[in-house]
Length: 253
Image (cartoon, rainbow, N blue to C red; front, side, top):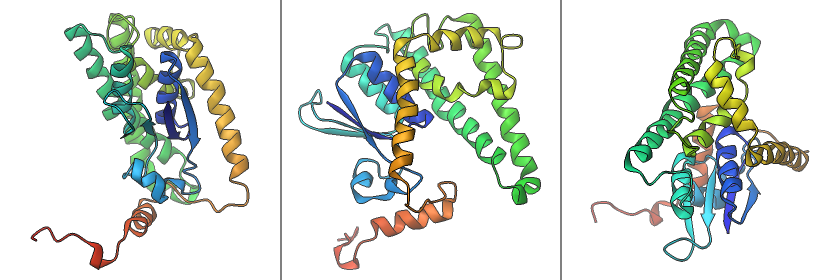
């Protein structure tokens, strides 16, 4: 059994798609990052970086329970556990890993920063023009990289569907809002439509809506936090992980 401790963000959806594709037995354990559940002690044991997703494999290949954080690493783990979506052929494997890391290092962070600055309150909007320009332009550049790659390959990683495709798709759902379409990005558009036709992807999209609705209902009457306030987040983490001085380990002892 795979326990997925998560929210239906793009990074959370990566793992849902992978679990649905592999047919592993799994369940979703909601972690409402909007109300600060990622700072609870039980979640920090799974992900000390106070992020989602995290998984617990109750029947790992080595036996017993195994916990993981970081969505890209989780996809590699699940691929190796099931023998699916990470090719055995060395060249295809490393091509796939290159494009998986491209998503983790570029698509996710840059798309996320663009979304953050585009959604700033109006009183901050003028002051953040440079940031919006920087991340919006980089987002458009990355869509060009994706289109160029998909002009050469049926799938992102290689000539077969892999975890590179699974990782990238959820981050691209809002491409139309950026003017990304068939006229200017025909190869990306072909790939995206092919992704959306996959049954596991369709199930993910339906589940993401259901999970959001369930979490919104559970959050009624609870105080929200600002997940983009990094100072506040740092203070919450420090408070959640503070220990009495008597319990600290002396590194020189």
